[in-house]
Amino acid sequence: MTVHPYSRPRRLRKSAAIRSLVKENQILVKDFIVPLFFMEGEKKKEEILSMPGYFRYSLDLLLEEVAECHELGLRSVLLFAKIPANLKDANGSEALNPNGLMQRVVKAIKKNHPDIHVITDVALDPYSSSGHDGLVEDGEIINDDSVEILAQMALSHAQAGADMVGPSDMMDGRVGYIREILEENNFPNVGIMSYSVKYASCFYGPFRNALDSAPGFGDKKTYQMDPANSEEGLRECALDIQEGADIVMVKPGMPYLDMVRLIKETFSVPVAVYQVSGEYSMLHAAAQNGWLDLESAMLESVIGFKRAGADLIASYFAKEIAHLLKKNVTL
Image (cartoon, rainbow, N blue to C red):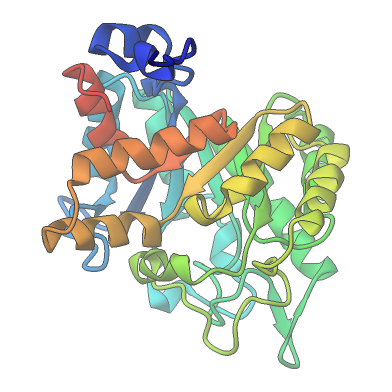
């Protein structure tokens, strides 16, 4: 007599219809935050050589890009300014310019697209001649003086109209200091998306090319996290939440799915993940060599974030995935 299994998991994989019915996680356009790079000038659009198909825009063309994102249903952008070399100095002074590039871009987006949720990057590396996220003194990145400048930077973004600020610097105590200065200046509704678990990763290389913000000396291991550590990430999240972070982020994404899951299971705040430039570029490089299908790789990588527990996904694939979803293309 042949023994047949009563439990057959394959029954629920028999057809596209049943697979769709029992799908545990779905990719939605609303999940995405679109990172955008911009620069001074007019009618300028420059491809980032290390990020195929991704561009820096002058303000006029950036507004067109935001309009296209809006049309696709993408409602949140994360802004990064490429600062001219002649405006960089040891103190990152241009970061506090009320008429600086970031501040002008925020005002323009909120004027033309008031329902777009604008998140600004708060760190000194694009503005500093050292390329580091904080002030440098005798070869050391100093913490507390850096935090004061970062808080003033966040305030200037709020004054320009930002909905949320994203401190990506990994200085100790910066979330609390930023929250305090926002409250004191009557910006209680400006949120903080903290880069709480940001690893000292090799996957940031193309991003640093995009903004010309690579460190001028050494590395960032004295303030960004050791890739070997997970408990440290939970401590960072706990501190940031205590200090007033509304959203916590894990960066990079794919190598750190365990952290997304740990944080989601430990805390009751929204968890964001950043699929960083190196993740984007390596998938493009493999696809260009015919080693994998880019559309499938994009979707599979993103569903991994959702399965791990991410609520929000910052990804350079956001527009491409939004186009696919509009055509009902799924895994």
